[in-house]
Image (cartoon, rainbow, N blue to C red):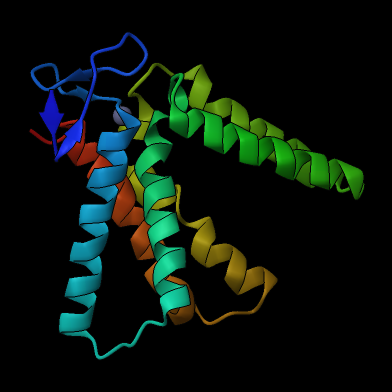
Length: 172
Ligand SMILES: [Zn+2]
């Protein structure tokens, strides 16, 4: 089956059901994220007189793709593999430096996606707005960075997330 110029194969773990509104092919979601990223950058350059360095653009592209995969963290998927891998590394790091409270909070947050049903809260508008919030909150509180400076990264995350919800047909 051809979707967004990519071949998507019907497999039990890598399912594409246009009719049922389920696209858990990570390739489809990555492609969707990239399309939304191009729209975001195009729109940004059109409305604001901002210049992005190549480094900025690559970081934003990485963020878009990560967040385009994130919602499927609630089921066995590429997104789950990547995010739980990152959480594991982060948790080991905080345990190693004896930051047990932070390690415990990360462990608690990591439980949340898998206690709900698949396509539950991770596939909602409020999650799309809330899950990427650390991208602006952490640089502000931890590094003292201007909110404006981290806004493009936050918007990149939200647009990646949005592309996932659109492809999963959460709105129509
Ligand atoms: Zn999904």
